[in-house]
Length: 369
Ligand SMILES: *Cc1c(COP(=O)(O)O)cnc(C)c1O
Image (cartoon, rainbow, N blue to C red; front, side):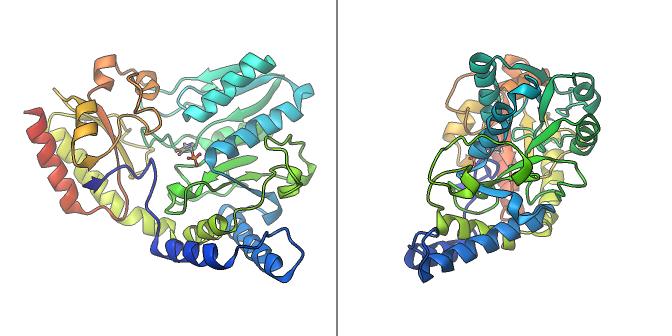
C-alpha cells in the first residue's frame, strides 16, 4: 500500500518514536508534582513550550498545550468570544474552514446568539482578503481564517487580513494545522493573535497540539476544560508528558526545508500527468502548498478508488470521507455534485517516492479507461 494521505495524519519520525518510548518508560511522574522527578519532567515540558514559541516568533508564556488542533480551535474561539461577550457578537470566518471551526461557529450561533459571516472563497479556493475586510463591523470581535485549506492546499492571505484586524482592533485567529512546518509562520509579521497547531500533522503523536494566544496573561479567555489549574487555569488535566516530548522531537526534527524540497518536484510531476489524463487540478496554480493536490478525472468514481485501491488517499477530508455528502469545500469553489464525486485529495510528503507517483498515474489511467 502506498500512503498518500499525509494531510489527514502522518507517521511518526524515528526520533519521535524513540522519545515517546523513552518518556513513557521514564517520565511517569506528574509534572505538577513538587518532587524531583515531577520537576524534571516539568522542565522538559517547558523546553518544548520554548521550542514551539520560537518556531512561530512567540513568547513561551503564550503557548498552551491541548489535545490537538480541534481543541486549540475550541479554546481560542469559544474561550475568547465567550469571555468577551460585551465587545460584540459578530464573527467572520470562511465557508471552507475545517469542520471543527464550522461546528464551533454553529454552536455559537445557536446557543449564544452570535452572528457569523461565512466568507466564500474565490473559484481558486483562496479567500479574497478584501471580502473579509468588507465584512468587518463595529461589533466584530473575532476573525478566524485558516492558513492552508486541508482539502485544496490553497494558502489564504493571512498577512493582509491580519493587518486589517490589527488596524480595526479585532482579534485574529488562524488554524495553522496544515501550514505549520510547511510555510514559515511569524505571528508578529502576520499579525496573528491566536494560532492552532497539531503534532500529528508534523510527524508527531496524535492527541497533542498547542494554541498560541498573544499576551495570554492580559487576555480574557474562558476555559473549555475546567480543571485543577494546569496551563494557567485555562486547560485542566495532567499534562501528557510523553506526548508533549514527542511533539517537541517533531518540532525540532521536522524542518520546513526538509518538508518542502522534494515535494515540489513531485507536485509538478503529478499536475502534468493528471492533465495528460484529461483531468484537472482543483488546487490553484498559485498560492498553494505542494503537499496537497486535489484532482478531478473524467469518468472517475472517486469513492470506489478511495475504498478499494492500494493508493491510500481521501475524497475531500478524512473526517468527512465516511459520509456520502459532496465536499462542502469543492462545492464552495463551484464544483457540481458529480464533479466532486470524481475528485480525490492526494497528499504527499518528503517520504513519497517518485516511483509511487508514477505507479499511481498508471493505475489511475487503467481505472478511467
Ligand atoms: C487536522 C486538522 C484539524 C484537526 O486537528 P486535530 O489535531 O486532529 O484535532 C484542524 N484543522 C485543520 C485545518 C486540520 O487539517
